[in-house]
Image 1 (cartoon, chains in turn blue, purple):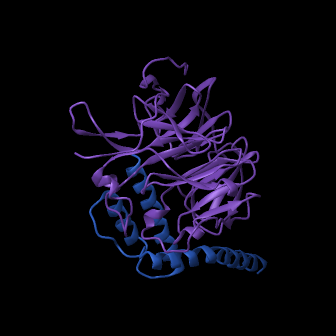
Image 2 (tube, helix red, strand yellow):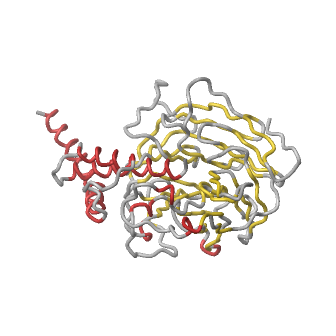
Image 3 (cartoon, each protein chain N blue to C red):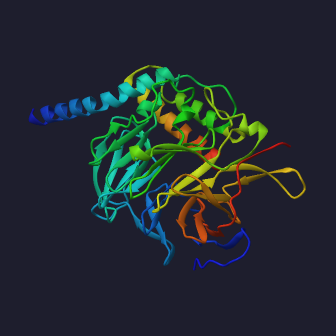
Length: 84
Length: 318
């Protein structure tokens, strides 16, 4: 029982820690349509769109975080292209 | 080994640093007063200084000496306050001790990919900023970060690409920011009494000069105005800039592409005082003296060039 309580506490704490970032990710995603596939055929955009498909359609905190992670990869790809 | 030679304003020496068969692809560079460091995507740190060639210094690791397991590729790093802070695009910085031993995760209010450090503060670029007022973050203790509002605007960005920034800082306290895609301007954002916008020399085609702003998602950034790839603050209050993607008129009269080949030196007031041309493309500047400038490519090639007469800004027509 004690172990279950500790586990629940840990899960709750992790969830609370994740919320502020996920909330920001959600707001950012909405502001810049991060969750929507973008048109274009460049390799960075292709990778980005493929990445989004792996995040699932649900606009949840988890999906928002996943989509923001896709944006991080896109950022790194565009940066490499700009400075190639 | 980086002995300068005299001559025209051209390249004087190019040294390929051998790393064996495995190609190195450095993700970021960090410069102190005496040393420059480069980081690989697996968290290896290489070092170079005037007395020693580029060499592997250490790997970020756990107490049992096992390599640190990254959940995301490390993209930016600084050495600060007897330790290292590494950014990976998440809302955490990973803190390591001076010898590379993992210490702790530092939670941030925003996702961060790029960090810089002065002697008394750590600076970070938010990857999810929607306007410039929440783009730069500053911390004087390495734990609590607050947005730096100086000279910023809450006007919504036109593109995600507005988060593509160069951010560098000097130990003495100067902090510089410039857009990867945008006009050829360097912003000195700190200290507050020296805040200024400095126009830098950049040669580009008329078409490229007209593509300074991005709207929406970008398919191919290479046609845009991409003025610089690095800024190296200097102890005298000046700085050096490594130009990025330039269009120049070649010997045949046609436009040619120069990528990471020219560096310029600017004095404390922001006046351009010299230009150097590297034999090969470099990604970061690691050292500047009165006579030469040293650059390193992201594959680890160390290239030296001599300072010559300043080559001004130009818009060339095909």
